[in-house]
Amino acid sequence: VRDWNGIAQVVLRSPKGHSARVSLHGGQVVSWKNDRGEELLFTSSKAVFKPPYAMRGGIQMCFPQFGNSGTLERHGFARNRIWIIDDEHPPTNHNGNGSKAFVNLLLKPSEDDLKCWPHCFEFRLRVSLSKDGDLSLKSRIRNVNGKPFSFSFAYHTYLSVSDISEVRIEGLETLDYLDNLSQRERFTEQGDAITFESEVDRVYVSSPNVIAVLDHEKKHSFVIRKDGLPDVVVWNPWEKKSKTMVDFGDEEYKQMLCVDAAAVERAITLKPGEEWTGKLELSAVSSTNCSDH
Ligand code: TA6
Image (tube, rainbow, N blue to C red; front, side):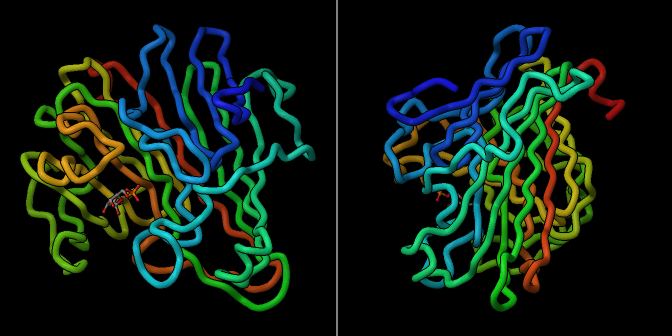
């Protein structure tokens, strides 16, 4: 555990030199590097690392809501809270069979949180790094007691890409999507892959559990595997929207793409004592063998 700007971060390393850094601020993954030390997640050069606001980039925990509805802050409060290390399972560099380095974080509602969202939950997040550098996130959200509650969720994931106009997503073709740029109106994807030449802000619903983000320029591609997360949010702000975000460079839309494994279209409801699990696994593969994902 190391101290970054006064906030504790946990560094995970693989035997081959891959690494990941998890901040207790927001339970946010703030870095994921391959064995050549290349950063695979995007962080804005203008990111503000100041509690309680989420830092622009990495992988942010959006809970108990994804989006801008009701009284909660956009994308919920989880990404704007200080988490703790779940000492029931202390961090380690291998779990017995030495296959994964992992850390377990825990978020419970504060008194203030309960005022704006009166539900007693435990959000346990395990971030792990495999010996081959795959990054896995497992969220377990439990309704501790009291009455049933519903929530939406997203792993708000900023992937680093070389040039957004050279990127394509495979696995979402023919799906329906809700277009955030037109009041979440429903459309059907017609293309044979998702490519980018303007602002995109969509929730692809009932998506497959394996999606590929191909970035030929950078000679690597991402394979995204998910479980328990039926939707995929795809977002690139493009030029005009970029200029409206103080913690984002005007040209940075060219080097990032948000592909968020999520549960947005249909909220998840938990009865007292029930627990939900949402898993994400990210692999960065060289483009030559990305076709075997
Ligand atoms: O990814 C979809 C989205 O809802 C966009 O509309 C945009 O608002 C983005 O999330 C970032 O939200 P943030 O609150 O992190 O600025």
